[in-house]
Amino acid sequence: MFAYGIFKVIYAPHKAFKEIIQDPKYFGPILIMILFIAANTAFAYTLLSRQYIEQTLPTAQQLDVWTENSTLWTSNGETPKNNYDDFINGTYYGNSSIEFTVNDSNQVWMQLNDMGTVNCSEPDGYSSLYLRIKWTRPEEEPENVTIFLFSSTPSDYFYYNLTENFSNSTVNVWNNLTIPLRENWLNNSLTASWYNITGIKLDFTWPESSNITILIDGLFFGGIFKSSLTNVVGDLLSYALYAFAQFVIKWVILGGLLYMMTKAFGAKILWRPVLIVIGFTLITMFIQAAINAATFSTLPTLYYRFDFMGGVSGESESALTKILDEVGLVNQIYGYVQIAAYLWTMGLCVVATRFLTQFSWMKSFFIGAFSYFASILLVSMIFGI
Image (cartoon, rainbow, N blue to C red; front, side, top):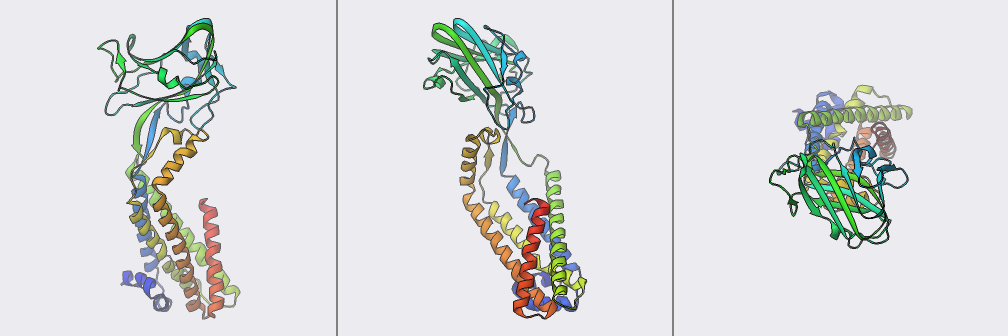
């Protein structure tokens, strides 16, 4: 019977409100609230289960710790130092790069030790290496660039030729490298293991001797993607509680505004029937959440990659554009459903005002519409949306 009553508001609101006002009970709004919480939680699960976020080492909280501390590095030139004037600016990055300088030489190498143990093996290990490199001297591009990944000891390593990555590079320009791991790498011994990467070395050579200065920043391992649902029960419980708070606050605010407005216009009305009737008008929140859950179930798997999460100006925007292209149609439907829900709820508020007060349709429209849009403003201020 309660289910019949709440859904009657959808197809025959004038009849439903008459019956509700004659015998106002909280069972209907409470049932609507439960349905909304269930639909909104289903919507959250549908969306989060399709979002995969790239995990990095170091983590986002650690920033690029390996290129923030020059004492972690050794080199064949001058003592490595932090450069606080020239570095990558982004969410995952700190406030310096590492500078390496060698004079009157055609080679410079730099090595990072004590980085712990990094698993780069299949299928669960890191599969990409991200690195920013700039040289400020000499003018010419390097003749050869090789990267080494040590496995346990400096005598066991993998190496990869990066020269082609600098074939069109110019001096004083940051090069953004994404280096795939495992494939096309060579190893110097059979004991080198991708499961146990413990150090990294870069080696640059030029055709002629000169003064060389190289900056390195943003060294991360990546390529592991994890679902946004890291704790299914905890995550969904938090969304259920959020939906509960959202419904109750909107219910009380909208009911309170409508009650005060009708009283201001001279209506002789009680708080209880107003609150219960308004609770029934929020059936639209359940319908909206159910449609959103169904719509977002058609989304493809969304990968939030390092270039998006890193927060570098230009790169994040480009990555976001790609994601928005994937969800473009679904977002359009979401927007249309939200507008329709706003108008529908406003219309139900107008009808509710009419049957609660017996005011004219014009006065009922003004009170209902004003109360509803004022409640949207207040709720958005509370929830920050």
